[in-house]
Image (cartoon, rainbow, N blue to C red):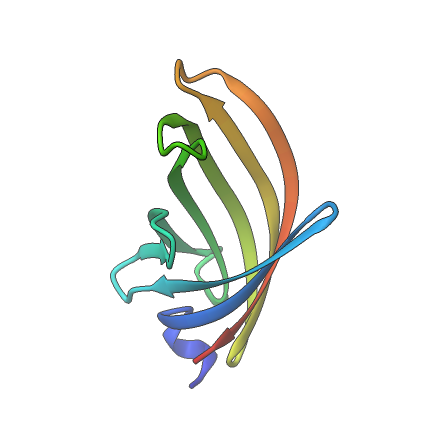
Length: 114
């Protein structure tokens, strides 16, 4: 695939936060929808009108081990696309049930298109 299609497609990713790395799956649709394999959903858009630059924001509900809601996670990332790979960085925010911000952490993501 080429960079001209932007990030549209399915991606195997590695998300890295301080002291933690997680594998995952992201899907970016041609119409600007962004999803993770574990239920986060949001949008993506080209940055500066370039096919090789994009940003995305996704949100997911957070639950405790008993399955009760405890807040939300918001991912905000800016990415550079290089053919079938991308690298992104940004800030992830954690909000409590009342909408108050309780944490902020830097995160990097690398992805490889399937």
